[in-house]
Amino acid sequence: MQELLASIAQGLVENPDAVSVTADAPAEDGTVVYHLHVAEEDMGRVIGKQGRIARAIRVVMRAAATRENRKVAVEIG
Image (cartoon, rainbow, N blue to C red; front, side, top):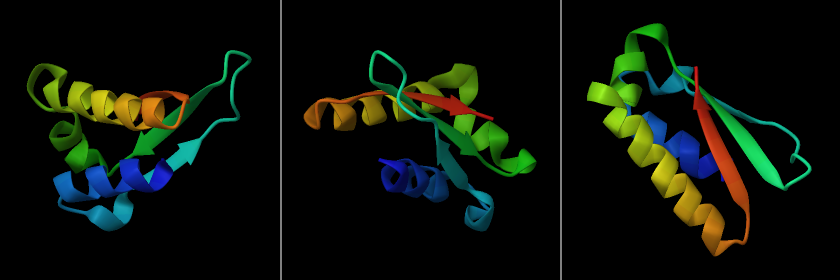
């Protein structure tokens, strides 16, 4: 899942080397929170106008997690 999130983000930004993804330990309900970090100048590219790209990234991640019977959340920072 981390690789999927990283590859999506690297395709969007101008500085793909600055993309990093960390994951928290699963919560008691089984949800894993992934933290996406990008360069400051690429933040707008990942969030998009009115958060549309960020919302789309979260939808793709949730769909991939559902196929593996997991729960995920994505935080962009």
